[in-house]
Amino acid sequence: MGLRAIIAAATLTFLAGCASTSAKAPFEDVTKTVRAQTGHTIRWNQGTDDDRAAERAIDRLLTKDLDVDAAVQIALLANPTLQASFEELAISQADLVQAGLLQNPTFALGRTAWESEHIAPNLFANVEQGFLELLTLPLRKRLAATELERTKLAVADEVLALAGEVREAFYTAQAAEQDVAMRRLVEEASSVSSDLARRQYDAGNLNELGLRSQLALAAQTSLDRRRAEGESAVARERLNRLLGSWGARAAWRAAPRLPDLPAEEAPLDHLESRAMEKRLDLAAARRNVQTVGQALSLAKTTRWVGKVDVNVEAGRLRERKRFSFGPSVAIEIPLFDQRQAQIARLEAYQRQAERSKDALAIEIRADVRSSRARVLTSRGVVEEYAKVVVPLRERVVTLSQEQYDAMLLGVYALVQAKQAELDAWRESIEALRDYWIARSDLERAVGAPLGPLPTRDLP
Image 1 (cartoon, rainbow, N blue to C red):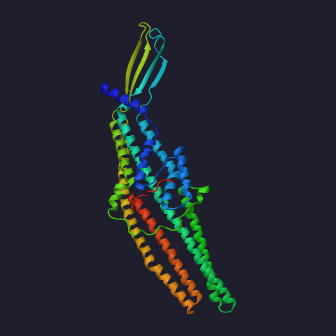
Image 2 (image 1 turned 135 degrees about the vertical axis):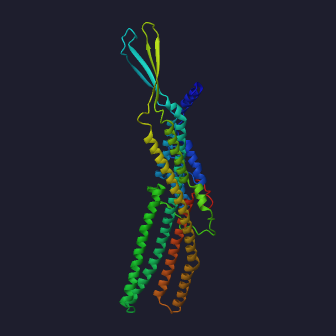
Image 3 (image 1 turned 90 degrees about the horizontal axis):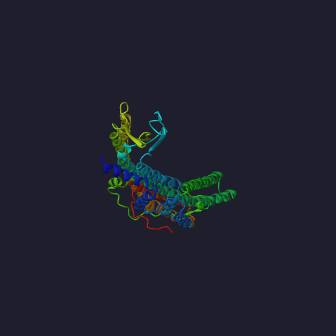
């Protein structure tokens, strides 16, 4: 290496030492990626004025009936686990700065074994510095920069994963509350029927079998309502955990109804190829392969050179009354360790990273196909309930009411028809919930939304 190259490398090393360890720039890159993929905003809570403004925005969102987009936005601002994952950016940024630094030189001061007439005073000083690191510094910085890119992709993918989990939890909680409301109506109908049965039994117009049958039905509907309330509470707390909500913030209200089925389904063609392009975890896996490859290249580059230390020793001679300098170079001889174990381990890591990437790609394609099938199936079920099952049940209630008014049908048959109608409505709610969860899973599998991005800004 020429003198100019050494000076240039030393200058770059000095500048690297002045590099900032702030992870602001990597976080801004993640923010842009998330915004482009979801339309939502993220923040890294570090006690700034912007963070306090975000807290106020969360409180304003929680004062209104939550929809799924508001729930996702709150989670991306307040989820503590996500906040912890952002620290990976700071760690990776620090590693990048560290990769651009050389080890500090070693200074030694000691007494020589020479007689004092040769050196006065009988002391020496030396400075020792590793030289090989200066030559490998560009490779190490490139390796750390690639790892930082992988970290940014991995963190952004965690954000998308959280958004998908929040959507599923929100739809589940919202449907559970609707289910509780429907079961309360069924319980009221059963209670009316059982009260009537008691009066008829007391009047001698109903035998014990008829009475016990109505009482058993009323008891069962009451148990179903209690079970539904418990499931609703569990679903709500799962969503609270994802939102990072507790205390007063846990008293949010969800919109009273699930969103209606879209009039037309989003295009579902070429989803596999789109997933191969959009999935951030797959992009992170590709970066991981690149990172391991660069680490392997660095190990192979230095396997025969090993450690190179440059040493300069200084002492003051008595007779000539001047300082004498004695430079030296220490080179590690790769006699026993030629980095063969390290290289073999990195080669195994490289093969492992390649296989993991291939396995993830296969898994993504399978997830896309299965999620697409679920979306189409769920949509068909919802449409069947809306067009056939629920209208039939409503028509049965109407006809039963007409026959009851004409004294051609008993009250119990009318109550049972009404209960069957409410059950059909409840099942249609569950089918609609399954559709939206399947759609959310498909968006997660593809790595991109199927429809337009949310356009609502923070309040």
